[in-house]
Amino acid sequence: MSETVGAPVSRRHRLEYRAVLATSAFVNALPRGVAVRVGRWLGLAFYALDGPHRRLTLANLAAAFPRQPRREIRRIGREVFEHFGTLLVELLRFSRLTPEQMVAACEFEGAERAERARRQGRGVLFVTGHFGFWEMQALAHGAAFHPVTVVARPLDNPLLHDLLERVRSTTGNHVIYRRGGLRRILRALQANEGVAVLIDQHIQPADAVVVDFFDRPVATTSAVATLARRTGVPVVPVFALPLGDGRFRMVYEPPVDPPRDDSPEALREFTQRCTDVLEMYVRRHPSLWLWMHRRWRDEVAPAPSRGMFPRGRADEGGVEDEDEA
Image (cartoon, rainbow, N blue to C red; front, top):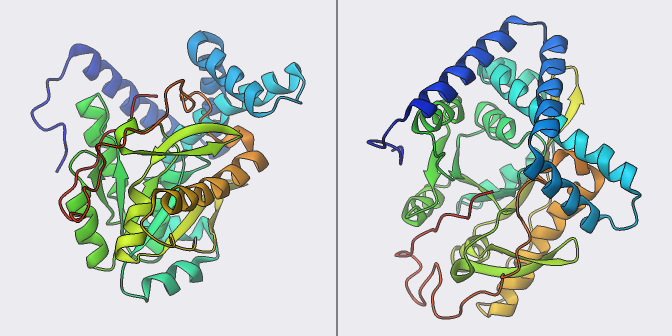
C-alpha cells in the first residue's frame, strides 16, 4: 500500500503532477529521436539552472577522478544531467509499451544466473544503484521472467508517488517502502520471489555499514549483507545499459559470495564486494550515475547500539529511510 495515502496534497504537488502528465503526453506524441533530444535539452536546462546540484555533481566527479582535467569533469557533468533528462523521457515512453514490446526492446545478458539463483528456492536479492536505466530493468525483468518486489523510498509529492508506483507495477511488480518493510521483504523471499534493492544512497549511521566507494568512506545499507547471511538468499548485481535506438542491455552479474559469518567485518567485506561491482560500472560509464546525490558525508561511522536486525530477531526489524539526495 502506498505510504502517501492520506498525505496532504499542496498546490505545488498538483502543478508538478500536471507538468509530468503533460510532459508524458508530449514526449509520447513525438518520434523517439526527437523525444530523446527533448530529454537531453531538459537535462542541460537543469544543468544550467540548478546551481547547487551542478556544483555538487562537479565536486563529486572531481573527487572521484582527481587526474581528470577540469574540462573533462565539466563534460561528464553535462552528460550526467543529459542522461537523467533522457532517463525521464525513456521511462515515460517505456512504461507505455506492452510487456511483449518491453522484452523485444531488451537484450538480457547473464539472465540464466538469476534463474539458477531462483531455482535454489530462497528468492533472489537483486542489487544495483541509481545507474543507467534501472527502472526499466525492473519492468523488463517482470515482463520477461518473474515479477519482482522493488524496495523504494516514497516520493514527497503524493500524486507523483502514486503515479510512479503505478508505472513500477506495470509488469506485475510490487513496491515495498523502506520504513517498516523488512517483514514484507522476508515474505517475498520466502515465496521465492526476487527483491530489488538500491545500495548507493546514504543510510542513517544506526543502520549502516561503512565501505569505500571511489576510495572514500560511505554509509551503506546493512540489510543486504544480513539477509544474505541469515537467509542464504543469493545476491545478484544487475545493471541496465543503453544500446541506442530505444534498446537496452540488461546485465546480470555473477552472484556475490555470501558473508562467511555474522561478524561485523564479514558483513562489511560482503557489502564492499557488492559496492565494488557497482563502482566498476560507474567507472566504465560515469555519465550514467547519480552524481548529484550527497553520497559522501562527513559523518559516516555507524552507531553500534542500534541496527536494523536486533540480534536473534531477524524477522522483527524495520527498514529505515535513507537521507534525502
